[in-house]
Structure formats: structure tokens, C-alpha cells
Length: 107
Image 1: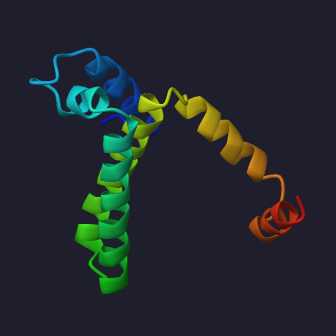
Image 2 (image 1 turned 135 degrees about the vertical axis):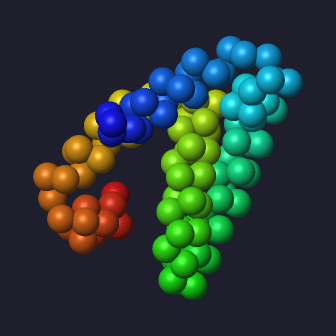
Image 3 (image 1 turned 120 degrees about the horizontal axis):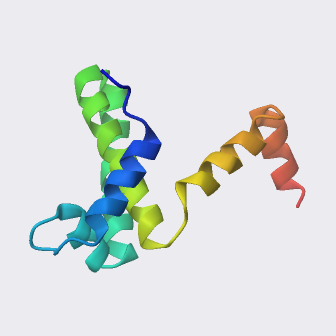
């Protein structure tokens, strides 16, 4: 079985974006605007955090999938390509996270 990637998820969101909102949850979220997608992203992130604190691995796995999906939909809603996010992550790997955070405090 092929590993499902974030690129696969972004392509799936792209393919469903043009469907009628009454037949696709993705299309409905996008039709309702970026605020709706962002709100759902926040809700799912909180649920993932709660599952992590509770040590519920199964729930965290499920909620993490929801977070990733809603993040991709939110990115689509504001026209930010996943490739841009991945490039930013790649850029950040050239230094430690602590150094990167310290550099941001001085700008």
C-alpha cells in the first residue's frame, strides 16, 4: 500500500474544492470562507491537545488527522500552497529551533 502524504491530501482537497458544497464537506468549508475553515482548524487543534494531555493515543491520532486536513483546507482557503509551508519548514531546519526562536525575538 502506498504511503499517503500531505501532498496527496492537498491534491484531494484541490480536487474536491470545485465540487458542489452540498456534496462535499471540503467544498462547503471553502464556500463558507477562510474564517469557517480556520475556526474548524482551531477546534480540531484544541481537541488534539486535549487527547495528548489525556494520553489517549487513539484519539490523538484521529484528531491529528483532523488537524492536518483542516490545515490544508485553511491553506487552500487563503491561497497558500502547501509547498510554501514545506519550504518554510525546510528553511527552518538549517538551525536549531531555539536559535530560530531567539532570532525572531530580535526582529
